[in-house]
Length: 197
DNA sequence: CGACCGATCGTCT
DNA sequence: GACGATCGGTCGA
Image 1: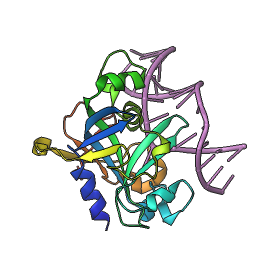
Image 2: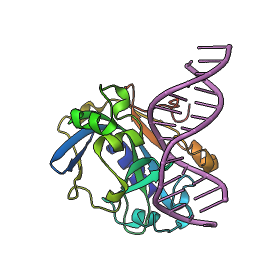
Image 3: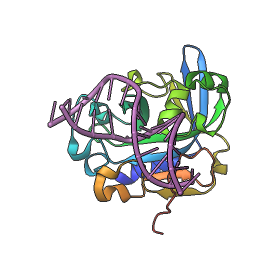
Image 4: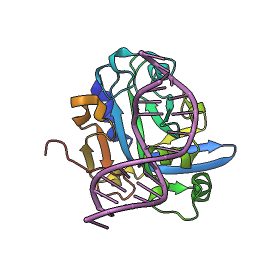
């Protein structure tokens, strides 16, 4: 059901996203997500049940990583969320950096940490060292880990808005499938329109 | 500020 | 051969 993925997209807010590659650990708190509901969602790569070599990963059971190259430059990280053959996924759009900030700066080729370090899907993937070669790997055991925090309850208010950069999706571009923590400075750009306002 | 533009390449038609 | 689920820089008001 679609509600599973939408629910999970909100659930992921406040959770930790951690990568451990070659002994280097970097992590951050998820503050912004977008749900892509597969076959029925014009914004999804799997709209209409489309299967290609690239999208095949989304048809794996939930818990796998789907990473693809955008504009030839950016590696965008998604979590596959549903049962086998139901290509739902959640794009992680922003995190608040927690651990390994020195490594993130190096990967991002920056001297100082500012909000741009992990704001936006391309930026956070680069900061955490996530690449398209990680697509299709199972989370938790492959170096990319999602963890629930003890004190996750200070999540705050969850805001729903329309997804970024999917104008090609027609009316589906207006669906409130983007979720973020209200007022969090790491949330990426775009006007926040609350659902139904 | 906001608008615009170039980078850069794997993927699909 | 066209085109991105983006980013960072520049330019003008």
